[in-house]
Image (cartoon, rainbow, N blue to C red):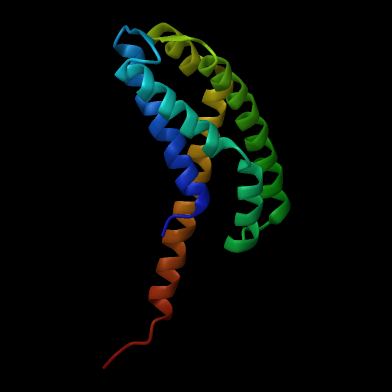
Length: 146
């Protein structure tokens, strides 16, 4: 079962994938168009997923037993800063009456968003490796049947 962090990462990554395809279409749309509604939907979902990411990460430290705790706390503080910077950039885009493909292309190039995505890729990979390791340990601890 995916953790809350993994679900949030997935939402943010889905948004990024959508913005890449949107940027490639060469659109200049109003919010009344289908494409305009879709881009706003994905960006809004990403902002929601980024909000309180630090609290979500802090909860995972305890729930997942991540250690050494101080190393995770330090990295999650960086992730939270990158999330706040990304939220500011996305909300600025959402405030525009027209969201063009060029505007989204510039958002995708924004160093804050790229930093956050890289942070999230790192976190999800660590969590996946921990799950694989836990499964392997559980398999070796399983009783052998005759």
